[in-house]
Structure formats: structure tokens, C-alpha cells
Image (cartoon, rainbow, N blue to C red; front, side, top):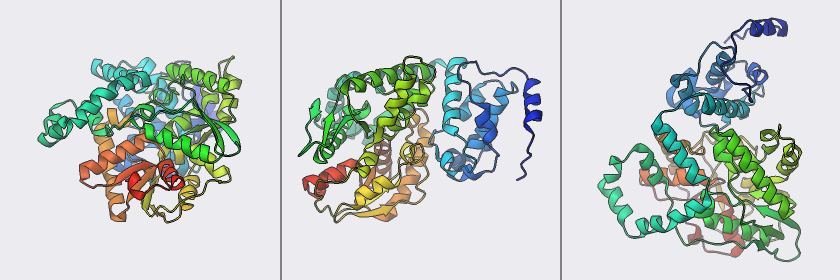
Length: 450
């Protein structure tokens, strides 16, 4: 492939003579970032949608080309143009592969924000997205769903409907939500302050998340126990709300910024040394609050300082000299890299090192580890066909390993892989990495995490 280099003078001249950009003036995609892309194609080998469909415009460099044409005023924002960005998972695998250092994450988020402001979605699309955001970012509303959903599961109605195929008569969006529903157990509450075991070494804040707080509360409980066992006083502000990650990744920039400010306020009042996060998507967003709020005179500097305190739980624990004794946990564990952990945050070795320290645990690597499982925020709810194809592919890669359990660092990946295994008929547990560490420290039996 031949790359034609042009001088900055010629390029500047070309943009001066181009029609006005189709984007508005509020944080449009950066032409400087676009110009870094040399269209080498290294990104193609890890782009999930390109691997699925083989379409150039559904690859990172293809989407960057579409952004360029919109900046130049050549291409309007049409439904077909928008579709190429809607089908992007935002997994950031292309950023890991890119030799030119193209910050695709900033491009896709800026472009999606423009789409939500300038493009008129269909009534059904708007209704579906509004429903998702009004529920998934509101823990108090998710809490109200727990009782009816538990009744749906425990009564046998769920099993009956799944066996009879009645669910297939529902719209695909509702089928996707039902398929991803975890088995709801008793809600484990976490105290506002969990004291450190032994001498306190650190005072940390714990992000509870939204879906995880209500539907996977055992993950947060395990996180608090492990941190406390390692000498951390764990502060869990009960007034914390959504961090804004789901909204930001879907183009709802203003709403995400407001939630970011509330999150900063809450943890500033808690006066903690670090903010520990056990959801990869939340962590990647919170580490970028400084960029999100860069124009806000009241929050710009506060956001930068706050982001510097944010750590994924595996990242935080890997930096802390272990003090809690690990008990033997004889399990074969396949580790699944969450995209917003390995690509967006660059956290790859830390979860593996934590698992490798557990006596008796055999750590196994999954082939094609850089490829997304199809979760990607709300992607598996708005693009269920593509998400299922990616999830099924990942399940097929894991099956030959004959692992006892799959560990991952993101609630979305946990639900996505569990759903994929259910479709395949393969009985294998999917847990958060911290649950295995918690089981080892408590001396729990292997069955407790299966």
C-alpha cells in the first residue's frame, strides 16, 4: 500500500478551500489526530467488525476516512454514514496495534457526540436508547427491578419461556436484555466504611457502579473484603451515582460530564488516597475525566487530580505489597482481557500476576486475546447480532482449554461470556478476577466460585 505524504502548507491550503465541516463547533473530531493515520492497515487484524464483515468502512482506518470527509464537508451525516460508527464497539484494540499513535478513542467519542446532536434517529431507536440510559445509569431504578426479576427466575417462568422459544417472538432488543440477565442472588450490602484488617496502610474509595451494584453485588463485596485484607480502609460513599461511562461511550457527552462532576464531588468529600474501580469501562472513563471536563473552569483541574487517583483494582493491588495469606485454590482459570482494561488503560500483566500468586491455580491464556467479546457498554443491547457473533466466537476459543472457570475484569464481559456459554450449551462459570483472589484469601472451597 502506497502512502502519499503532503506538506503541511499544501494540506492547510486544501482545508482552507474545502467546504465547511458538517460537524458543529463543540469538540469536533480532531483533524490533528485524523492526520496521524497513515492507513497502514495494522488495525485491521484486531478490529472486530472488520473481521466479521471485511468491509473497509467498518474498520478503524475506514471510519477515520469517513471522519475526514465530514471535516472537509464532503460527506453529510446520513443514516448510512452513522451506521458505520454505531457498529463500532469502541474496544480500542486498534490503538494498541497502531504504530502511529492514533488516539482513535478520542475520535470515536467526539464523532458519536456529534451524531447525537446533529443526527435525527428513528423514533424506535430514540425510545430504546432513552430506556437503556434511564435504567442502566440509575442504580435506584435497577434496584426496583430486582424483586420481579428474581421472581421471574425462581418461579421457573424464565426456564419455561426459554425452553418453549416464546422469547423469540419478542423484539430483538428485549431478547438481548433477557439473555444477558444474570442469576440474581441475595444482595450483599457493603458498609460505608470497611475497616482495614491489621494496621491501615491506605484509605481508598470504592466505585460501586450501576449494573454491578444491583445485579452483581457479590463482586463489590469481594472487592471490599480483599482491599480490607490487604490493609486498606475502604470508603464506599452510598450517595455515589453513575460515573458516566455508558453515556460518554454512546455520545451523550453533556450528561456524562454532569455525572463525572457528581462523582468527583462525592469522592473528594471522602478524602481518599485512591479511587479503586473494578469495572474496566468505568475505569477508563474516570481516568479521562481531565479531558472530558477540560473546558470547565470549576472542574478542569479538580478532574485532572481526581483522574490521577483512579486505579483498576488489579492495578492497585499489584502495586501494593501483599500481606494477606493466599490459600490453595486448585482451579484451571482462563483469563479474558476486558478491552477497556487492556487497550484503553494498558492494564494487562497486573491481573495475571495476581492470579499467578494463588497457590494451586493454573492460569490459561485464551487465543486472540486482543479481540473483543462483544460486550462493549450497551453494544450487545443495540447491536445484538454482531455482539452474539463475537461472543460465540470467543466461547469457541475458550472451550478447548477445558478451563474450570473464566476470569475477567469487567461486568459487561462477565455477562456477555456467560450468555455465550449458555447459547453453546457449555457449562462454565465466568467470574470477576477479584472473586478468585477473595476466595483464596478466605480459604474458600473451589466450588464457591463455580
